[in-house]
Image (tube, rainbow, N blue to C red; front, side, top):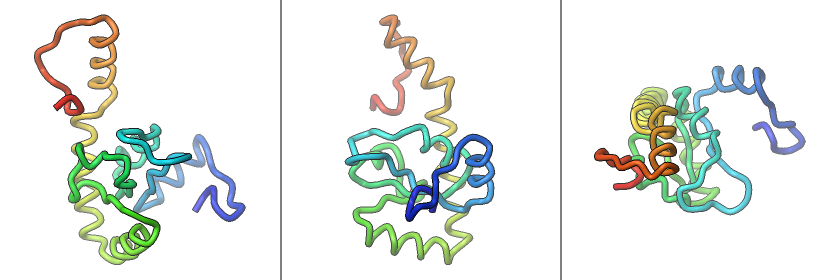
Length: 133
């Protein structure tokens, strides 16, 4: 695991290469988990089709179901789930695919930019964004 036990984090092309060779990813941000917060890592992991593990404290389970990403409650829970899904390729692939499809449908850059522009310039809009429901 990059960034742990003196294994240096990786960036840029090395990061892309590592993701392309991975089956699962941990969406872990620095500090305490915060409601609805994630770094852009979530996009890189889910958007590239990795089964993604997310701390339940982020409350991102408001947007994603258990058959789209994997939420964990503790380090022990995370450890058990990593073992479970590393031993079941069919289930891992099925969940990762559903997560990717949902993420690309509701959280792609066009949708997020559209939201930011409408909010910034106080433009009325009819369609509600997923995170406003």
